[in-house]
Image (cartoon, rainbow, N blue to C red; front, side, top):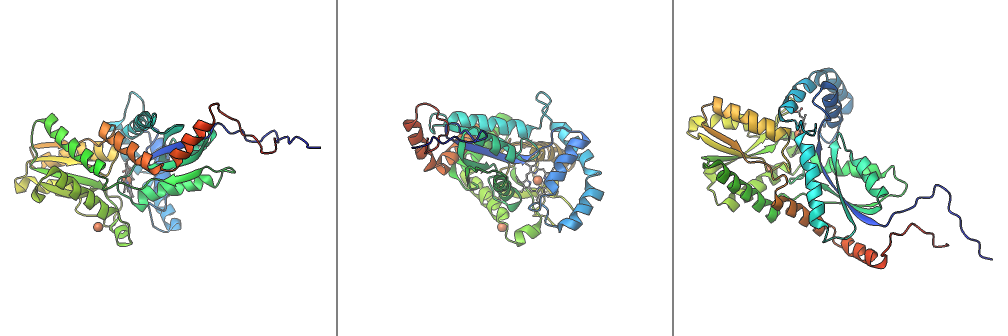
Length: 365
Ligand SMILES: C=CC1=C(C)c2cc3[nH]c(cc4nc(cc5[nH]c(cc1n2)c(C)c5CCC(=O)O)C(CCC(=O)O)=C4C)c(C)c3C=C
Ligand SMILES: [Fe+2]
Ligand SMILES: [Fe+2]
């Protein structure tokens, strides 16, 4: 006689299967106070993809020389750009809004899709969000690093963390990662349109457009990180899309950290030297950042203006990051849709087969 199978009480019940998308940016502290910034910096700067000094030596330097002091200065910098209304950093506000907008854009296109967001450092964390997506029924998840230019220090560490999170799951979702998009035509044209829109809004033409990318230690380029080359490719494509001459466009690298040599030319030195060459009206753009953050709002918009004006510059303005511009949201949504190829068809079939949400059932039942 056939006996009915009784699943154990703790047997997982699976919600109707769905597809998840997790947009991930770098991260940010929970507050501007010493403790919050220290916690964030400790996690960030303990990442061996970011700091390649042997861990035993680096731990001593980090704990004795960096963490006792740097959180004060970094906290003061965050305080200048903090979103007081929501009590969070602009990077967090913008990333959340990007996820909401991408979800809206794709809602009619891909059935059963959940779009969420996470931060590589700080909260909400990648493991927490992957677990939440799994709980919501996502058995296939696309992780999308919000970095236009691939670097081991950014893109790779996001994907490392995502795969590491799966190590703790008994029932893993299937994971895909989205490629960086430094030369996507839609990204380049959104950048060019953002420059044109900014010039219109400001009502003046710059003598020079300075494209500033976050720096890396020169050593990482020497060891094979492709980031430097892809930054230059983005910049060249942007200049060509704008139709500007080479002498009206510069590429620089910002945000040096530590005493070693970083990618050159350095942003601060470059803009300080422009006024004496007669270049008095400058606009800056930061194509390497998908969202405005400390590095753009404080370092480029505020500090950069001060450096340029102290050196005799007359007009200075930063083109905002692509943030939630409709062309940026559409570009992200298009890449997501492309990278879900195959999965969206499977999902459409699942939806067609199953009008009602179905709980997990055993074949023997
Ligand atoms: C966009 C690409 C980025 C690369 C490449 C990158 C490399 C990199 N960064 C540090 C050290 C710091 N970065 C900090 C802030 C920060 N970095 C990025 C992006 C890239 N970093 C962003 C978007 C932000 C801002 C986050 C926000 O909340 O707004 C900081 C913290 C601030 C400070 O204390 O100065 C540090 C430190 C290294 C060492 C590195 C490559 C090796
Ligand atoms: Fe950084
Ligand atoms: Fe290069």
